Length: 98
Image 1 (cartoon, rainbow, N blue to C red):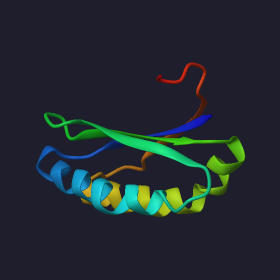
Image 2 (cartoon, rainbow, N blue to C red):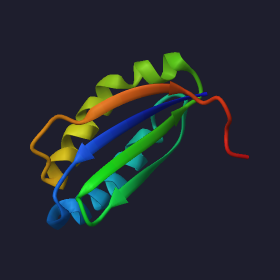
Image 3 (cartoon, helix red, strand yellow):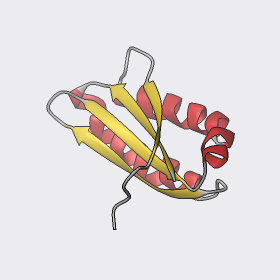
């Protein structure tokens, strides 16, 4: 299993909109991607920062979804009032929750 982590530096006043966007649009759309294994959004309401983590069955699935992920992260970052580019990192899930 693999994970993609995306950090967004938004603004506190716009974070709720980013959370709504992720919950109502990004996650449902991600469920249609091959190999999607779940996702979550961690939020710091005080600073406006957020980190999205999505899980993928294989590395190939994760990288095949990059175009989709680029579109989604751009939308969520805009909703959050981010002035910079989201930071994206890829990981192997060494110890899954269970």
